[in-house]
Length: 489
Ligand code: 5AD
Ligand code: SF4
Image (cartoon, rainbow, N blue to C red; front, side, top):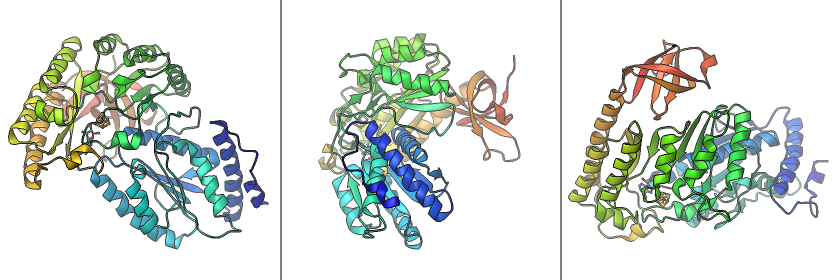
């Protein structure tokens, strides 16, 4: 009897992760019963918006769903459809509302479908209110602090909407913040040979334009031994590249019971046998230590690439942004890194149109671009986020001026990235072969490989190379990528 599965009072474990393993088992029973009823497997689909953190969260969510018995499908016509949302800029929000309209239509044709929303957008009260009011077909809402609870939330949903009761009840579970880090739950890697590893969660920096500290909470670091063990476990399953993830990895470990620096963590990860490449993201310039530069220089596996968001080149604006460094500090840092690691690829994030940005401020940004000669840069138009200090700053810049500056910035950034890519043409470099490429030239049997510096090269080769690190000659630079050929000694 499927109803018996809901009789769980008094037997629910109190602690994590045991509690979630309990709910995973319960959900396995429910999903199995549904499979019998439908005569097929139950399916899931996750759409992920935003940054690497969200993509990592989605891998964890997928891990739990697969453990429960769901199988993944490519589009939203699934039994369980989850949107993992981003709210760092307004256009990310608009896209989600647009897609929700489509999901509503799908659900009206397939009422048994479950629609769930999670991620940064859900941490904003006004978003949850809007969904409750205007998108009542949504079934489950949760935030960034409790993704580990997916099995429990699904169980609650099924229990509250079970056949006997019939009435639709939305399950909403948003925590304002948390100190908890739940380890050991399953996770499903998108690629079998590379993995993102959370080393810390949240951010304490409160840059005045940024909503992240409000939706992802205060900084919490994972214990180094948990991180090392997770990486070792991944390596034993075939992973050769890891990306260490945090909003500001340079402040990793400061608040642990036994404090440890990010540089020291990196040194320990570098020693893991079988691991071949290490990346990390993101570094705040204000906390980048000499120790880190030294470790990057001497480590065997750390890629010579650093993402170092500058945001603006104007010291005046950097102050208003609460970035805690000046233009000169930033340029000195670039010099120091380049002196230690001459072949390093430096990339950045830049915001155009921060409130009060004058032509002179913008010229300072262009000046930094020219000096730093970034290998690539993500450029963003300032987006006003409700609740952040900058949203109420005077002198919001008008749209036409922003557009003009944005175009000029793109041109300047493009010039240097092309120059950088061109400078490596003809060299032989090691690449991690990631996938088959069908877009660059469908006639050719191209694979895509990623260089140490994060650029891509397409070259002919067989499928068995996927997941391996091999040497490739960068025969022809095509602007931001290369056409190459496998190089054997
Ligand atoms: N408007 C535009 N860009 C933003 N970013 C963060 N908040 C905003 C905002 N309100 C950019 C920053 C950050 C990147 C992840 O997103 O450049 O480094
Ligand atoms: Fe946002 Fe600044 Fe934190 Fe980055 S460091 S997540 S830009 S507040």
